Image (tube, rainbow, N blue to C red; front, side, top):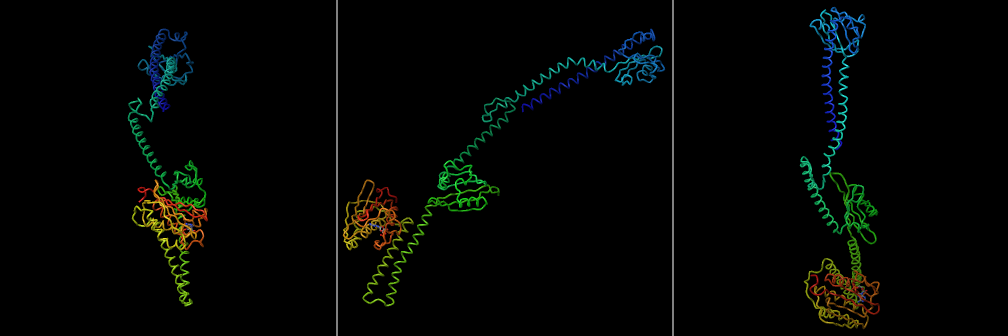
Length: 556
Ligand code: ADP
């Protein structure tokens, strides 16, 4: 910009200088031409008077040779020429200035002279005898005078040019300085040219717009980050070259990446497993793809979808889900189904076998009662199993639809102990109830099932002559009930597992149980917001404790 202004100003100055020079030269040339003509004329008159007076003698007696003097007779013959031999010169009667002088007394011409080989000015006057005297001078003398006059002027012009150079540079810098001083981020404070006002106001407007857009963009980014950061699902956005454009911390956590890793790097730095690579490759080939990633006991589901913009594939979006729990649930469900089938098959096979024997009349009449008793026991076991499965399924589906009530666990324990009294008596197990009223909130049916299963087990896995002590108590944290027995106990390493479905420590001692009782206890307690714990020593007995939340805190 500065250079352009400088060049423009300089060009104008140069043009003005040259135009002035041309004008001055023209004026000077005209002026000196007139002067030369006037001098020529007066000199011619002066010499003419000499020739009139003295004739040829005047011309030959030391006439200055600085200009050419020619004397031509009235017939055109050259009588004298101070620069050339007149005898050798051709007739001059037809020369324009001579002819004119012969006709009207004086003549003037300007032409290229072959003799002198340059542009020449001629002036001729007719003498009284009809001859013509001509004096000539070269144009060169005009130019010489012009050049002489121009010399001081050229100096002035050179100075003027230098001045123009300096002024142009200074002016250019001065013109541009306020423009350079404009702070584009803070246009409002600039004192500048009036002419720049519309531009500055436009910049101000655009600055406002940019700031607004930046704020919007930032807000949107923050919203996006807030949403994606609060997602439990991992989110990865990648470009066509597998570079990560965006990711949330869940993605890094689920894929086990560095907390600062991801953006700008290849997505394969986060995971290189075959299913992951396949999903990425498929999505970048324009196809949606799902895959399972299993490592270190965790299971991740990858859903990769291509991202298109104006019909062209620009990248892919990957959603990473933690499906460990779901997979475990599915596994448990598969195991449960297999166990249920197995558990149902055992009593059914027994019933079928016994029924066949009876049907074929292979049983003596006195043994029929025994075989019928077998069928009865197995059928009861089947019903017990089916009932337990139904209870568990209800708890899985969110619990039975019973009403929540405040229940006294002491009174409930009394009722449950009554139910197991017959079995206890058969085993000579003493039942004791201790403590006092303990109020808990819950669905009475579930509370009863919890207590029943614990007491039933306490009797079933007890020893002959053992005892079961149920204690109900109100504690500052809430109601608590413990069922302690003096039975066979549970080895430490399987204490966690006894709560699993169909798990039995020793099938030979399972006393015909279904293996579902403690599962129902665990799920029922969880449904009521209670906590079950177990302490046991093999050969000494077990104590199951159920702690309920304080009344008023329970989830209803
Ligand atoms: P089951 O119908 O077999 O009793 P549970 O789920 O109630 O099923 O119990 C699972 C297993 O835990 C039982 O098979 C038994 O081995 C063990 N168990 C449960 N309660 C006791 C207890 N009070 N004393 C010793 N072992 C027990």
